[in-house]
Image (cartoon, rainbow, N blue to C red):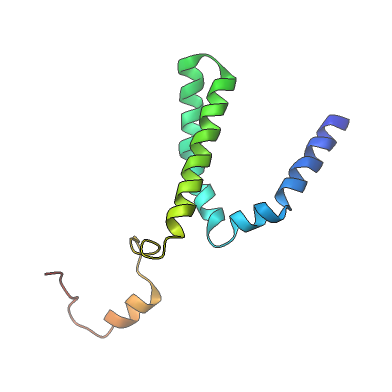
Length: 106
């Protein structure tokens, strides 16, 4: 029981660390959530193919770290951040709400 308590204290310390809070703000939490399923799948498949759970966990952690890190890095580049999105913003809806037809790309 004492080991579980220490582990819980370590996890809460990591969660409340300033570095963790900085990484998770400004959309970082959503990026981490989006990167997790792929990393979990990579972990399972790597464990099955290598037969070594430690290798599978290492490969999955690397996948999660690189996916999350690269998405944060690309999101911080001003000319790329927000350029490609798959949703309509409120400004887009207001701009086209009074038109009968939507504009077409040439």
